[in-house]
Length: 345
Image 1: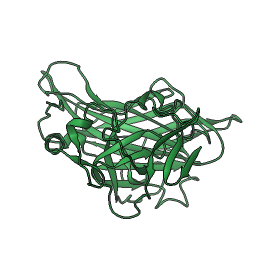
Image 2: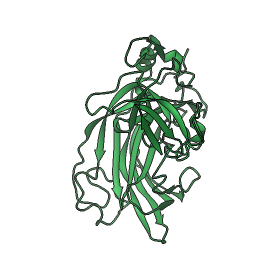
Image 3: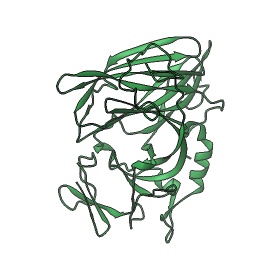
Image 4: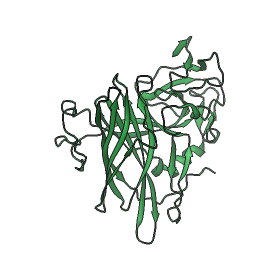
């Protein structure tokens, strides 16, 4: 449930996927957030813009935009995407999996680097974990350590519900005060500090969102965003690491559950690996009309600077009907820069 009254935005937490009321509770189900603003149909949102995530419901603030290339396999293949057999053994660079040879052209689209309000993180019910940026630290460390900065996310322009607030410190995140400064009379009233600009420039290679891949099978849309994390040196060769974020959305009416995953991972070194298993990240998420989306992140390593991945999710409806949902193929590309720490000083 969401109610807009006198431009005040009152949000039903269950409607937005948040199972607990906000700090200022107006009733058992509604919380005052701020004044609703009209979504931007043209142009980008500015640094410091407060927003609600349209799908996952959390409060956030925009740090800066990324211009990504979106490869949507639904657009050139609407006629034949639902009738072709799925071949998970063929590296699918120039063609959709099991489809005819067609080049998928990327279209530019704006995404935003954002901070998530820490008060909302425990109540986001349809994400496997709170989103974070993961990295390896210094590449010469002979360790298996994986570092993370929690509460960082990437949000598509259309998933932003902008609002304004009178609070001078409206978001709980340890980086909010380090990155943003309240500026009376400015719109939005939070402006970037030099710390944010320096952090963005220093860590650009590990933060950059460059490619987004989408494909829909029987009303289940899969979106994949890969990120290069750096590499580790050892005595024989380098090991390169990537993080990939996957979002599943049920665009239909029938409830479905993810039962199995089937990955094919190709490395430039010449190896082709198959990974099969139950569910994803220890869960078998259900996609329904009430909670149509699920998102998670995972990691993959190769003993080569590049490769690619593709595969399928085995989905099952309530009536027992099962089908394979295609995971769009995506490249794993490394960067040449030496990794640097993402720690804030």
